[in-house]
Image (tube, rainbow, N blue to C red; front, side):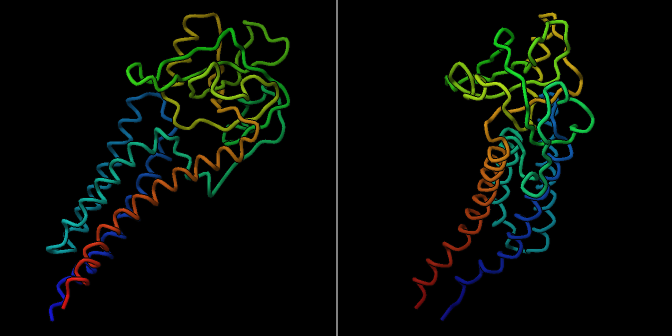
Amino acid sequence: MTMGWLRPLAAFPGTILLLLAGSAEIVGINAAMMPYRTGGGMFVGWLLCLAAIAASAGLLSKLMPGRGGVLFLPVFLLFIYSCLYAVLGGQLPRLLSLRETGVISVTEADQPPHESSDVFHFSDGRVSRRYHWTRSISRKMRAGSYHVAPVVPEGWRESDPITLWAVGEGSGEFPSDAWRKSGVGGYRAISDATFRDMIEQGVSSSRLVSRPRAPLVFLDDHPREALLSAARFELWGLLGVSVLSLAALVLPLLRGKRAAP
């Protein structure tokens, strides 16, 4: 009786090592480079991820003589995920470490004590509808719009510097109901190249002045829960890559077992 159908088992350790290494490289490289200020910076980050994953796969294939071909699927899936990860927001590290402010005014949002905060809670502030700018995500697909607007305190004047920007994506007038309220919270946008480009264009065409460290946030009534939900969504995507990669090894085993005499 031949047991050749068991040979894919030998590829399990190498595949698991690649998945672990690739996941760490994607999260680590993006964490080191974010926030991306330009689309070009995001592209460079993606290229670095591709190079790191390819190098890991090449090293492991040398340690798996005759079985390196099984790494093609996990490499391909990791390549795709590395592209989507930054676009989704790159929030996975927040599951391990989350920095949160107390209740502060919007004029304090850009101050050094809150420079590394992930979640903000505000006692005041409203979205300025006059300076609400949008950009179509995809004109052909009608996928909605990017939104940016300054969040300003009561009595704000155009000559006053902006210390906080609201950002978001959506197909309606506003990306969320929180944009219609005063004194809500938000969580920091890490992958913000498109939003910053919109802000720079909007500021240059108006008389507004933005503080250099003014954070970009997704407004939400429950910002901590919203941020953790976004991070868990990214985690499920990474787990999906692992499941599909390992399933590709398991299926031949099941077929071989059924065919074995």
